[in-house]
Every structure is written in C-alpha cells, then in structure tokens.
Image (cartoon, rainbow, N blue to C red; front, side, top):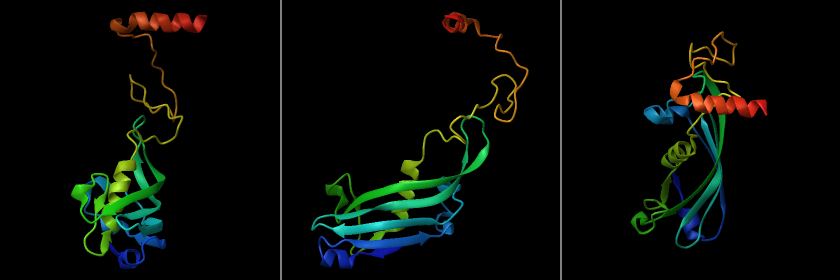
Length: 168
C-alpha cells in the first residue's frame, strides 16, 4: 500500500493525520508474518521538515505465538509505537528509509516494524513454568512425579551450594 505524501512536501512542517487498516492478506506471502491473525491498524501523523519525512504513530494487531518455555500456541495483542524517517536518497542517511517520488510504501514500514519489535522470547504469560526437563509435562497444566535428584555430576557443586543457601 502506497500513501501519497505530496501535501506534506508542499507544506513543510504541517502535520497530517493518518489512519489505515492493512488486511492480513497483504502479508499472506510473507513467511515471517504467518502468525498474523487480524488486520493491522496504523494511525498517527506525518510531516515533512524540508529534508526528511517524519512518520510516527502506533500499530496494533493480533498475532499467534508459540511460547518459548512451554511450547503452547497462544494469541497476543501487539501494540507497537512507530517512528520512522524517510529521505529521497537513503544511501546518504543510513538511519532513514527511502521514498520514491511522492509516495511512501506503508506495507514495508509495517512489516519492518513488526519484525523489529518481535520479542526474542515470546511467553504465553509472565509466570510460565515451562516444561519438565525430564518428562516434558507442561508444568502450567499440572505437576509431574519427576525429582531433581538426578543431577549431572558436573553441576553437583552448584546444586550443593544452592541447597546450602536455601538452608541459611
């Protein structure tokens, strides 16, 4: 989706409000955004300062994730601030994106923002207990009968220190 920025360029300093909805089908071919469950809404404002086009706002959508501790699939709401600068010649400003003529590609802005803001560890909830390292039981759904007595001998000294620090 391309957005015309001719008004901003013709009137430097004037802030122009925007609100767009990009359907999730817009990203259907993108393997890195297969977890997108809802349209992406983006709203905010942009302006031209005579050199750069500034684009700021907020992006919201819903995404499917897989918890890195328990491996359960879950849905999460994504709300991300957007701030980007565009220049006509991006090779002269490494921190800015480029625009062609009088349009900005909003789809690539949304895609890049979603990928950059994706957490390294996605958790189904903050207190996720994860999986039992011995039997694989999801500890969020119940406990198991495994014991922690089978400690790797290389970690025995650390286990002894941990036990002694609990007793103090």
